[in-house]
Length: 530
Image (cartoon, rainbow, N blue to C red; front, side, top):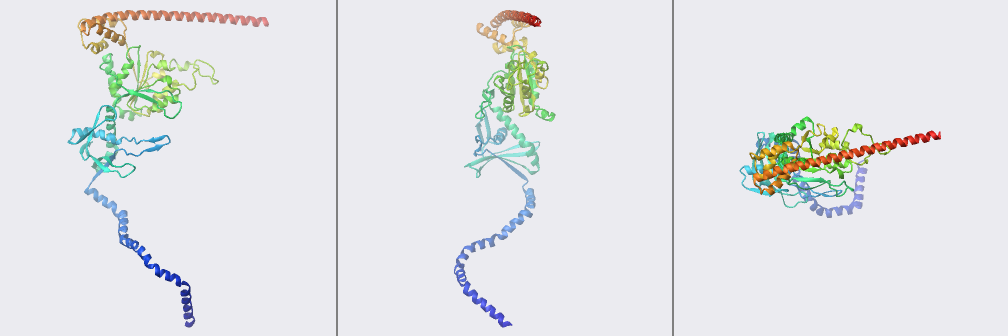
């Protein structure tokens, strides 16, 4: 039985050598070349396989324990806040620059600490807007800070930028603190730093006076607001007004400015409304300028006559910033906000004429109310809304109720305390024994506005060469003359109004008579036909 098996094996060997011989020769010939290529790879795998296995084991099992040991040796954490990069992002409307302001806010915050502490190598840079300077640490300098009893350290660091398209070095503000204070630093300290930095940057910039552009015809290249630098010299010290009333307004503004946490806790938008009313020339616009200078706020002067729709009005509100005063002057003249809405006829569904026949795309009282305290009014914080009017009695009660216009300020005629302020402004005098009393007597008897008195002071200053006594005597004569002219003008205006009212009454009476006659004629004609 063994012979057939051996014979089969011998036959298979002969067949293999006959058929696979060329492939075996090829393999034998090229094996040396293949080994020259594979040998380094095999050697690399053999050399580094244990190291890779060790790293895998370390990452899975030992890293967490080693970190705990490292925290015992070095329990401090660092956070780097880098200056904005040079990359440019693109939107569907074109390039969009990187406007992250965190680095600038931190640098502004540290400017105070850098000036007060031992950092002796400083760098001063001009503020982006205004004439102020931002003093910061030079590279490699350190300053210490403290927040709620926790010590912290800041340092200015420069590192090579290896990410993105930016070439060269990038600066960092590096914060170092103990590991146990991580939650306090991240949740409270860093937001505090940003808020304080924004305050400093905002105080260095020039204030602005904005006005709204005409409602857009197309989406592209449209700006809701245009502005100029606001440099009005009026302050509460130079504002001609009763001193007690000025103190009340200043106290109210201070309370509002310092009540951020109160408004958040109460669930109210951080805003406040002021209604300024009184005769023309009593200083309503000047009051707005004094408020802006006192609070260091921008002013947005809304011209409602160029706003087409409620939607456009809402977009204007969205484009305003915090720390601003939104002003609508002569509110009763720019929009139909007078009378009682319940007593007005409603707009007809078919577009028929009536007393409320306004275009459907116009700004309405409802849109204005939503502008003041609707959902969209909370889109930005720390904002004041001011309405001015000469006729407060004409305004709709819903517009000026408490909660919308929180404080009603009457800008009245010039009295003695207001005159004292004007005398200090124009003549640089605080008192005059005889002539001040005479001026006060004239002002008690006559209703003259601060604008009237200021104009008389200018005339007296020119005629009296700036000397107090001659100027005051001329002022008294001018005030008496102005009072006579004003009384005459008021009498003439009253007479014209009475004559006009009489003419209207007569015209209405004639129209009524003619209407009755026409009705009788129609009735008689109908009776004759019957």
